[in-house]
Length: 353
Image (cartoon, rainbow, N blue to C red; front, side, top):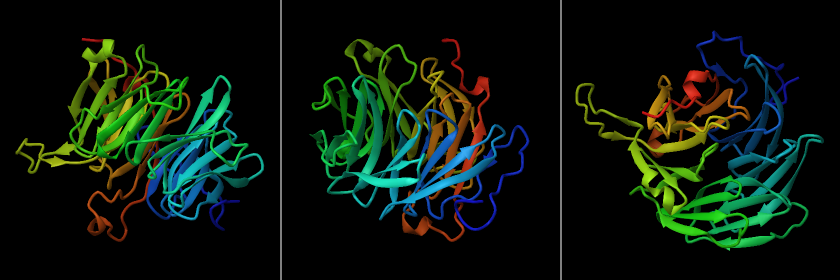
């Protein structure tokens, strides 16, 4: 049976090796957030239709809807716990909810005074903690057994994006503030910087598999910065333009500028993806400072991306991101969830020049 309606479970026909696979039974409104389980190929999908959907992804890329649970407002963020048996979501209803995949029950686990923009699971030596970042200008830590937070951290502004690679946590807020936390001391920022990019921050994402800790920042102005945490590594900081187009085919002026909507680091190789309102996705190697792959442009903005636990599957959402305001919300705007099988040469680091 299908969990998302009355029709029988649909499986996409096996696509040729080169073609990305479209997931059937996708959300009815724009997709905001994607997260794979750290234990199996289960994909959680948060949407502006107020729901979180869980899909099982088979070896050939075929998918099946497994479960769905709701918020009282749009879902803005999804994540999993370490065991991969619970999905946590944050929403515009000022709450975070936890869904237990073993019994199909969901319950509220966090409360803020404004929408919960990001939820992240933190696996500490003492056990798992949920961090929630909100537009109420706080990050709160929850241990899930108690209705009150373990601690609350005041942010300089509204939380726009947040990422964790224990013990590093990076929080990006309005007004281009970026706060860096060492989670062995989670209640105070280790360092606060102004974004190296001149425009509003859209996303921060922590490096994986990197000798020195750091993070990437993406802005609304088609630009990404690679930023190391420690001063000794600062000579390696750099930024680059991406997600831009020429006004006319021969202009070569790159004057059409698009937002960078998401940045996902490969869990094994430490390479990363960027996606944008221009409908394109690129894979990059930060150390060789090289572009590894460019996807064919999609028929709409790419709103969210993620790799599965071993980096063999790359999931991305083609959804309207409101980058052109209300006028861009045309009837029939694509709303698709796609799966790409990663080839080694697309995601492996290149030797440094």
